Image (cartoon, rainbow, N blue to C red; front, side):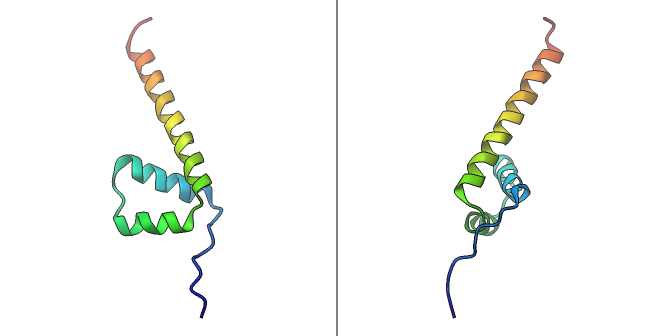
Length: 69
């Protein structure tokens, strides 16, 4: 029949899960390639920016709580 690639899903939680797995390095290559086919580049970029902002914010809060002003 048709060998069209699957349509990108609109679930933002899958994009965030894929980005978090990439941040930690716990994703298998097969699963990573599947995510790239299912998610649009815009979703991955936005999820990456959000995860990076949360990570940086967490580090800033951690340092401010440990180091006295």
